[in-house]
Length: 206
Image (cartoon, rainbow, N blue to C red; front, side):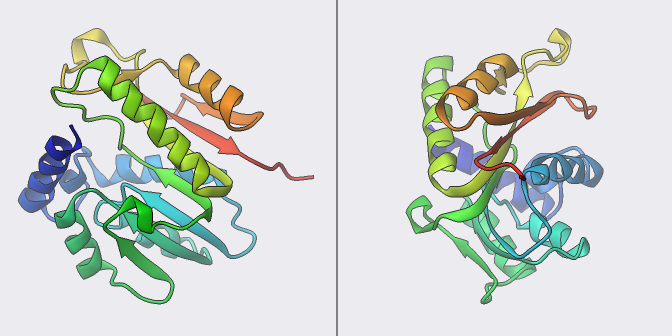
């Protein structure tokens, strides 16, 4: 199932290069808006470590750098072509690294995942939902202080919904995270895109 998704994204980045369209977003502005929502889970007051699960070409690194954040970053993607672009754009260094296998990721303060649940192609609902839930378990296991992810919303306009994309019920996903991962969960559904973002915090400011 994920082999088809990997090919889909590899073809996108080959066609469009390291751009928002290369990771199947409409624009740089919408990509950055998603980053803004996801990073609300982070604490920028001190240096933090972050896993970018489904990192694409590593655009999140530049976004964090432009905001003066102090961080150590690890990116993972199922597309080898994406990782090639990321290494060319960002490079591997002491503070930034990219890995080819999920198992090479280490536990970090935070983990974020943008767009990884959207493109399901021919996968059925049951298979995709099993994959989704196991991936949420993985995001939780990788995160010391919290994690965040986004999904297309089932509240999208019916005439704009596509059969090759997966639209989740935000209420069900919120409930899953509340019951399984933390009592401190936020659902963001108010930022102008046909999607929502979930923030799972494992600690709250005292």
